[in-house]
Length: 464
Image (cartoon, rainbow, N blue to C red; front, top):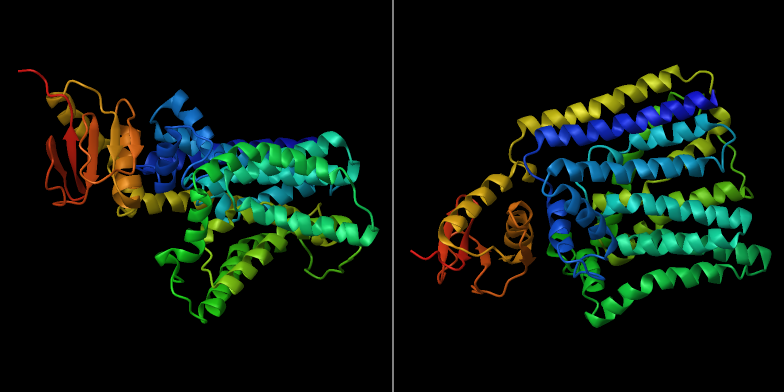
């Protein structure tokens, strides 16, 4: 039985990778905005970026060095992050269950959460964070139960890598800190190996902290801007209603995200009636890593009047499977799971089919942008008029910079560096991107790419 569960888990992992790599590859014309953005930043590897901590671009750049501008490679990379998370969660579950079937159920429940299926073709920092969050929790729990120095070190290392992948990992770390404070209060003792984990956490973090201070904390400033100052957040001017409306919206969204989990879980349980043992350390820890970060995010919304974007919550849905299976374990009859697996199979297959239909029939999404075709046109005009290579593509803002110029950087032959440009910068080797009819003093060739934008190409002209 144990062998069958491991085999079924392996089959599930392989099918997930195949489906969610193949479907977007077949039906999408272009990569998503977040993927294009990280590829433009990763073109110049640094200790940090204006918007990103440094780890995520390392992975996309590694894949670019191997596969170039093949879209399928980044859909694959996204799924590798997801299934690595699944594998770690499956491993993590062994410390809470005596049978692999419960670990399998825990992971299959995750597959029904929006963030692990429909949104995964949009490779972004939240998806890249998933395996590191899982590894942080795994080594944290191993440290607690074994008190082994190696586990404490690895806990600190993966906590550091998580923070350097996306700053939202700090919400999980804050939750874990609360768990340890509770332990100290209850036991009236301090485990000095806590400081071993902290030491390695800050060792991992230190190069990026140096970068942050040397660059006036731009990445931290951007994180606060997206939370509190972004006009799209609706809170650029303080409104009392925001402190009530946004938390309410947040709670509704989180409830809806978990609806498929409870529907599927109902097929496996006889009832949802439970008795909670507040002295159960395993349950307290699972609550800490599963629900407490969401509670802290809710408090952020409540106190700051912040609109929490749905995608931000990807990070916090790694452990609901283990938590709910552990919570309702006594109500699960492992000999009567046929209905559960049938329901899961339906969800597992229907979601990529719906994604494919949506991509095929709805043709006004960013994934339908003809980035490759436009880049080929630009490259052709450049080759016919200039003798040198394209070195820089530049644009301002997320539309003309990150999206339009970023797509050129990704698709053009020699992958020029992307820069947020200084207006009217027409140095040789540059392509400047701007809104249609907005470039008035191009020193090279003005190329209109209607209905999207126009660009100024400035290179060394071919001798006649």
